[in-house]
Image 1 (cartoon, rainbow, N blue to C red):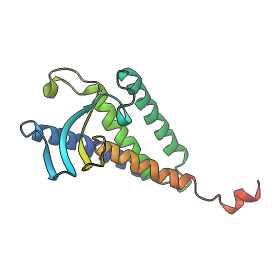
Image 2 (cartoon, helix red, strand yellow):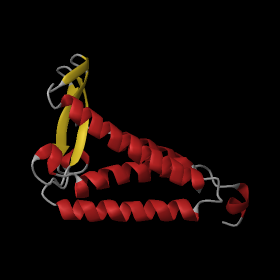
Image 3 (cartoon, one colour):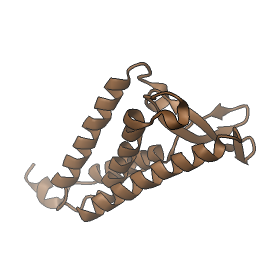
Image 4 (cartoon, rainbow, N blue to C red):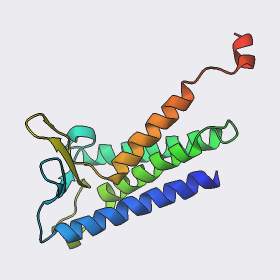
Length: 165
């Protein structure tokens, strides 16, 4: 369980630190192209969740995020002896904590008003084909964590469990 908590704390710290640093750095620059036309850093506030879903319902998103954090913590605790990839659950929790902080506690110092959105800054696109929604490191951690935990949970049943079916 200590790795779960360590990964969660490091993920949240890396996410919140990167948001603060990039938003402060871009305050006078606007958009910064890492790979012109393909990958940029930009300041964006997402008032919704994935692809802006839930915009206009900040309290519901805050409560949903809190519920997700509780479920992930319960999953980690209940799977602690089953060789589950607890690091993946730590990534999910750390990402959720970073976004929860943004939704609930980002304040006037940067934006002149209390926000109910998440600071996103990574913008990927393929010219004339597609532009991904702007995202942050918390989103990356959540996607990687969910994918890894899902792969683990859908693995073949152990032979002893299959024999009792």
